[in-house]
Length: 266
Image (cartoon, rainbow, N blue to C red; front, side, top):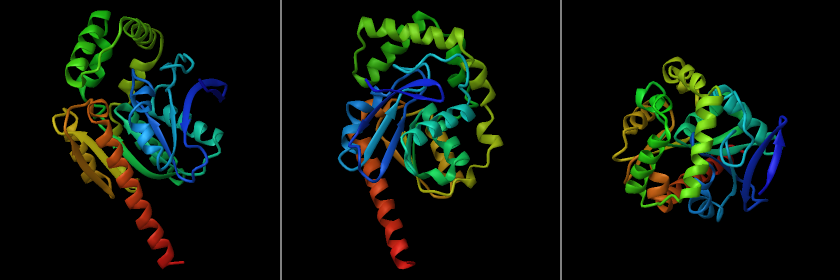
């Protein structure tokens, strides 16, 4: 259980295949943890890359923090982690709200990011996305988990349910997460995403309510390609092998193209 201290805060991280030249950093979504990658997606990526996963603040086994859930702070947290690990440039993979963190990081620290993979990043203006916080209760969590099980076939035990409930209650009632997420509702409209001038792969479920956001991002980002995966918002759980293979193919193809251009001009 590696716990590191970055900017006086404890962060739970996991690394696979250390020492490899190219690093992929995986960012999970809000109200989740790094396990969404650890068992299925990360091992496939680690056959080719150094893989870094971490729990966002107050998630998983990272330290509970009262504030700083806006994209500016989340991107700064990520850069602190990258610096702590002494990584000069990385590839970012972000799922759901983690996809928004990846986009913000690519905008703010462009010289540290090689390529982007955005999975199911939502439109922050979506009332349904932000409405989760307003309607949260233990009954809501049970209903959410039942729907999650229906679409992913993954069961959640009673102990895990109780652990998630305690984490959700802390996030919803004791932190600034609600105000911070509301403050980010105009992220897409107030940000010039065309400034992200690096290759980007957009992975969205073909039945996902976030699919229109993926289609919009493909037009907005200069070097983006949308790939649809069978499923809904839960595609990392529904199709982990296909997700991992798509990421490996994208990164290796883009790296090969980049090396060819360097050789031709060097």
